[in-house]
Amino acid sequence: MSKKKGRFSKYNESSTYSKADSAVMLYCIEYELPVEVVYMDNTKEVVKIIELSSYAVIIRNEETGIDSVVQKHAIKKINIEGDTQKFIKEYRKDIGSLR
Image 1: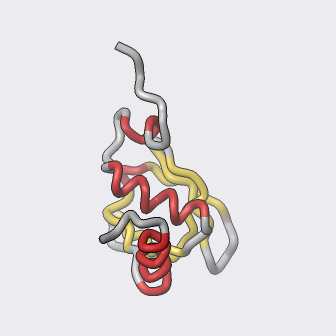
Image 2: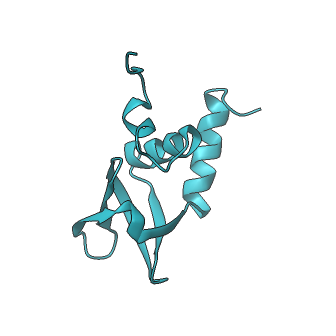
């Protein structure tokens, strides 16, 4: 069996993200949109996602400008709200992926 090639191929294997989640993450990465990360210990941090892999997320803290590598299992959730959410909705309407 051959591996699928395409936009989401590296996110499909051993990943906890669905294709829709990966698409939103790709928007956040491509357009450098800020998101709020909630860690397992309930601490929160506003960051930009630099890179996403099957095991870790590379983030840049908005306040300090410091890059960090965070393992996926250390993240409880990623909140995409406010201007970032509005941008994604408008962008998806423009390309016709929302009805």
